[in-house]
Every structure is written in structure tokens, then in C-alpha cells.
Image 1: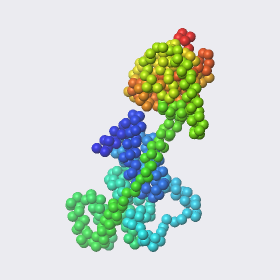
Image 2: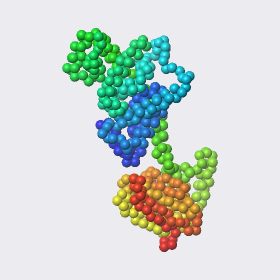
Image 3: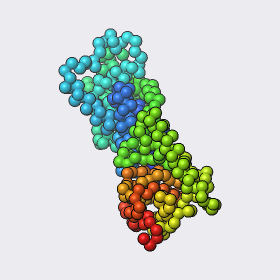
Image 4: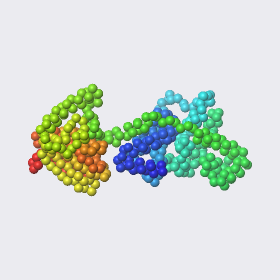
Length: 178
Length: 263
């Protein structure tokens, strides 16, 4: 039903009804923002990346292949935007030798933060490719197949990355005393 | 002893809820024999529960508005997009006081000019004055004009007519269009001999009008009528170039006379 509604909105948008895209934004702004935020880990930057992802989706709407679910296509754009953003930020940070380390002391990690923050903190210690599959699987509840399409890697690799990511997260959380 | 790949696969599939009853049973057998694997399973289940239980983040309140605002300017960056209701105002400078002063002055000047035009016309018009925008009252103006040119449009995607009239230092272009899909009509004029002064869209539908220095673009869907007014800057204004584009391709073109028919 949701997929049909999405297709109807896309069709209306392509036939010149600009209000239809408002429906798409309304429906997906929150999940897309959440996925981006879990990957990018900065509220303001996530807003910019989400905005850029929707603009790109709007501009490339004609290239959307109806064979795939619309939200998977949208997530694909959002994930790519997030990865591009992180890579560009990384390049900037590499240039800046005074950049502070993300790593916190055990005391900082134990005091006054709840489990959501611990998870957010632990996710940051994961490499981007592991973080992305964890976010799509656990925060967006997507299937291996959908993650495979979004991240443009084979399903087998998705599974392998997800399994490894969980083990790494376990090690990180244990190391941080959780 | 390290947990083998098969057991790892079963553990992860169990966590994702993908194991069949037979596979779950197989995993239970492994876990009962392999303490290390059982510990790993418990830990990963805990990690997975933590991840699944993380609260979603509240999206910024103005995210939707920001997204939508950043879309329109990108799409219409090449041309200034003008709605009939804001057509004239958007031409004016952005500085508030100057803008309002110019709008006010323009309104008075236009009102005087149009009043002069209408005061000597007695005929009734088929145009309803409720469809006028701004301070212009042009409903009877075109009736006192003399016909200059006209053409029927009978294309696969677009039907209708276009005609030009002139009089009292003005040229009017009446455009009747019927199209199921969006078509773009372009009126190109010589800015040295004509200048665009206003438009009237009967049965306002919100179809966008883009106005440039030497052209007016009307995007039409449905059955609509438009009357566009130009003021003459020269004694004998040069003809206008009228085009219809469908999906970006030129499907119709005609030079429209702006003087007396036959001139």
C-alpha cells in the first residue's frame, strides 16, 4: 500500500504536480534524517545532508527505477550523500592537525549517559562501511536485500559486514564498560 | 575453540529472525555444547536489543520547509518564475521601502492610464472583472482594439488560438489554450518596440508565467485563456515570435503581427 502511494506521488510529481513532492518529503523526512544522523553523527550536518539528499532525489526523479521500492532508492541517495559528506569532512580534518580525537576516556563514557548515547558513541568507533549496514538493519529495519541495493554491495557482503559489525560493537561496548 | 562459520551464521540469522525452526534447533544444539558460542550469542543478542531499542532522533522542525525551499530555486534557477498575483511586485527592488513606494506609484500611474482607456468605451465585455489582478482594469480594453493577427492552433497535444490586437498605445495578445499535458508557450518581442505591462488569466489556475526582458513564457495545463498586454514603445512595433514547446521540443511557431491587419 505504502509502495503504491509512493509510486502515485512519484507519478504525480513527474507529471508536473509539485505538491506531490511535498507528500514525499512529509512521509520520509524523519526516517531519512534518522538514518543520516546515525551515520553522520552531527545534528546540523545531518539536516544539511538530508536536505541535499531530497534535492538530489527531486532532480533525479526521472531516473528512479520502479522495479525497486521508492524508499530504498531514496535511502540509497541519502546514504551516498552521508558517505560523501563524511569523506569530505575527513579530508578537511586530515588537513587540520589540531583536530581533537573522538575517543573518550572510560570515565567519560560511563558517567551520565544513557544506553542510546552509548550506542551512538559506539557506532562512531565503527568504520563507515560497518556503521552503514548496522544503521540500515537496526534503525531502519531493512532486509539484507534492501541494504544490498542501497549500499550497492552484494547481499553476501552485507551479511558478512553486519555480522562483523555486531561483534565489533560488542567488543567496543565491553571495552567501554557496558 | 573458536566458533565456526556455520554457528556464526546461525547466531546472526537467529538474531535477525531468519532461522527456520530446524535451523533454530540446530543452533540450540551447538550452543548447548559450545559455551563460547553461547556467550557470543547472548552478547550479540544484547547488542542487537540495544540497537533496536535506541530512540529515534527528532528531526528539525523546519526540515520540511527547508527542503521544499531549496528545491524550487534550483528548478527554476534559469528563469524568474512569476505568479500572476505577484508578477509586477517581483520585478521591483528587494529593499522594502523603495519597493512599496514603486508599487504605489506604479499602481496610481497604471490606474490613471487604464481609467483613460476605459472611460470612452461603452460596450459590455465578456470578461468578468472579478478575474482581474492588481490595479489593472483591462477587461474592456481589448474590445476597443483593432485586430492585428490571429491563428488557430490545432496540434496533437495542444488546441486553441492566438490573436493580437492593438490600440491606445497598447498591444494585446489573447491566448486560448487547451492541453492535457504541460506545454510551454513563448512570446518573444522586441524590447525596443514593446514592453510587457500586464496579464489577465481567466479562471485562474495557478499556471506559472515567466517573464523575461524580451519574452513571456506561459506554462499551460488544461483549458485556459490568457490576455497579455504590451505597451508600444515605437510607432510600428515589430512582430512577435510565438512558439509552443512540448517536452522541450518546438511544435509550433508563428510570427504575430502587432500592427493593423494587412500591414
